Amino acid sequence: MTNSISREPRPSILLIGASRGLGAAMSAEFLKRGWNVTGTVRGDVRTELHDLADAHAGRVEIERLDVTEQAQIAALRDRLSGRSFDILFVNAGTANANQHETIADVSTQEFVRVMLTNALAPMRVIEVLQGLVPANGLIGVMSSGQGSIASNEKGKHEVYRGSKSALNQYMRSYAARHAGESRALMLLAPGWIRTALGGPEAPFSLDETVPDIVKALLSKRGKPGLEYLDRMGRTVPW
Ligand SMILES: NC(=O)c1ccc[n+]([C@@H]2O[C@H](COP(=O)([O-])OP(=O)(O)OC[C@H]3O[C@@H](n4cnc5c(N)ncnc54)[C@H](OP(=O)(O)O)[C@@H]3O)[C@@H](O)[C@H]2O)c1
Image (cartoon, rainbow, N blue to C red; front, side, top):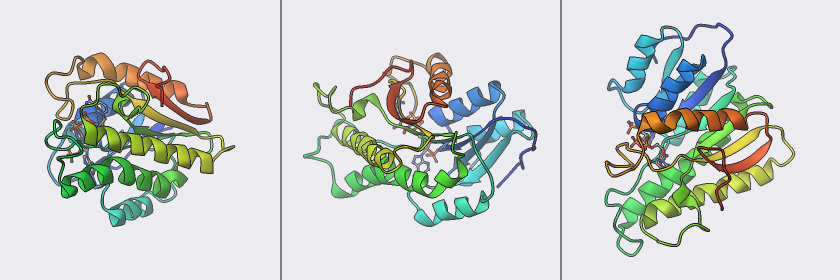
């Protein structure tokens, strides 16, 4: 879409959902650590990723993807055909507009939108783009501590929780299908962070958390198989 990337030998990440929030902050952190970033945005509007591209000439490539559109995922694979990324990370995610509503109250349309965006779409992205990641690479997805069934003793955020639990389950099935392969697979629980999705009440800022989030991802490289980890690299109970 914009800014062709220079071919200097730097590690590279394909980051799905990099326009703002955690995705943009992770892009900035990877750039700081010397990586090249190919990030996706949904629309035509200028985003934080465009600012990063301007500030890091030749190291940021911007692609277009709405993860809920299957044809767009296939088109992205075709555009990136022949390329290789050390990490594929699917960050894009959403919550139901009224996070206080229970599963008893949510409309069918809103339920389907959240499940499609948070559970089905990330798996489709991984299935279609996995060939861009070499055998020693890492495929990761942004889950949430709220996806943990074992930790759910207080309820709340029912629709969102269910979507991330479904994502975790689908990743486990993906890992089972790919057992014995050398790729590292990761479900990341970043913590509750102040973004548009996390809201102003969240205890942590992006600055406080994103360096650890990126460190946790990098630490998982070279460790085959699926783990569900928080940003300090600790196992989250399923
Ligand atoms: N913040 C937290 O406390 C927290 C905690 C646990 C997990 N997470 C997870 O972290 C991820 C990022 O969340 P965030 O807090 O950074 O939220 P955010 O600021 O609302 O950002 C959401 C990101 O996802 C993208 N996105 C949403 N729907 C998409 C779609 N259909 N296709 C492509 N991109 C789409 C958005 O792109 P647009 O700009 O185009 O809308 C944006 O880049 C999500 O998966 C979220 O569930 C967040």
